[in-house]
Each structure stands twice: as structure tokens, then as C-alpha cells.
Length: 290
Image 1 (cartoon, rainbow, N blue to C red):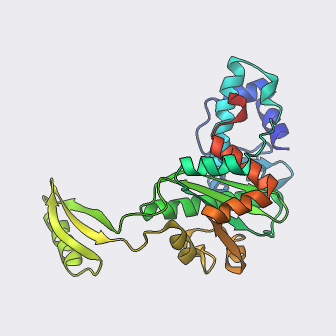
Image 2: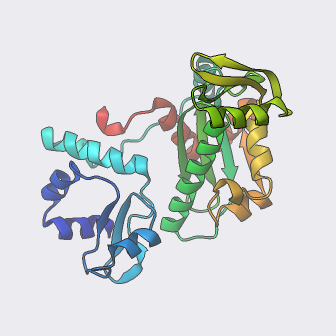
């Protein structure tokens, strides 16, 4: 229904692709003008990057399951198709999962810096399920980054029945115990005094404060140095306080598994569909690129 609504809005398939090349988020399409004159209300109701209002249900976004990544993959694919049309854009090319031996080799080559979160069934219809997964992936990716972990990539997958997976590739699963925290510029007198007052008595301070070029800085002990332990501690109660989606939080609270190393290898061996998803993730490029 999403494709049909887009084509009806832009009058043809090729014009849809042509218009997609100049999209800027948030993109809103309201074919039946349910929110005419109230576009702000529509943006308050729907937080996805692409909002296509269901012509027969004003409270439903047909594009709720489209993540930011998928949206811009579509824009890139539209651009490539218009340059060189091919049937390859319309056929889902199967990616056979790597053998266990090849998977281990790939993990070794990457330093085993891949972790996955395995979730059970989520009580949501399919399009809501995907939007909830994407929101949770985004929240946990932001959490990891805020704590100093460099997340190279992340992705979500579901068999739309009883298994959901979110994966993160990190530059490192373990961080050094000390981090440098930069404060205000020395020229900012009041902000400098507040920084010094706070950090001279701060319990995690291990060195400083000192002047780093033109700014104050302090060395701090990290609260979390292990990515797995960080996730475990923050989602034990469902993770709503870190942005986990409302329908995912009770699933996390009830039961989840964070997988890395041998546990991830075992999961990969036992779940062929998930193994295909992880293989595509490791390859890291859309199939239409060849």
C-alpha cells in the first residue's frame, strides 16, 4: 500500500523515483489531506523520517516501518536506477549465510567486535514492530556512543513471529579506564569557576583539572568500560529511561540475551534466517550495488 500511495501522489513510478532524489526529511505525504492546515500536528504524531498518511486511516503512517537508513538506501537506489535501469533492483538477491568456519574467520578479522541482542516475540502488528525495533536500535546506539563506544554500524531484523535481533558493530568492545573530559575555554571566567568547583570534588576525577590549549580538562574514570555490561545494566528494567520503545521494553524486562563471541557463534549456527541477516550485515552493501 505504501508503494501504491507514493505512485498515486507523484502520478507515476518513474516520477516517484525522480522526486525521491530531492527529498529532505521530514517527508510528509497526505494524499487525502487529512491534516490540511494542521501539518504541525502530523509531525507531532509521527516521528519517522518518511510520513505517508494512510488514505483510509488518518492515525496510521504507512511508512512507519521505514528506518532512516532504508529511506536513504531507497533514494540512492532510485538515483542509480534512473541512471541505469535494471531488473536487479526488483529481485531480492539471496545471500547465503557464511559457513561457521568463514563466520569465525570474519569475526577474527574484525576483532570479535560484533554484539547482538536477541529478543523474543513483541506484541505489535508488523509495521509497528519494525518501527519499535528501529527506535530501540537508535536509542541503544546513542547510549553506546554517549558512553564513549564508537559504533561503526547497527541494524535490526525480525522474522516477524518470535525472533527479533539488533546488532551493533563497535570499534572496540572494551574502553580504556580513563577518559579526558574537556571543559569550558579558560577565557570564560564564570563557566571555568563552575567547572573547577564541580570537578575538584568529583569522585571519578583521577587527574587534573589542567589547561589543554585554551580549555580546562580533567581525567575521569569511566563508569562503563565494557559494552556488554553497559547494555545489561541499562536495560535490566526495560530501558525506557534510555529511549527503548514502549512495546520492546517489557520484552527486554522479561527476557533478552546479549550475544558476543562464542554465544553469538552458537546463535548464528542455530538460526539460519538470522545468519542470513548477519551475513548481509557483515557484507555491508545493498545487493543492487552488485
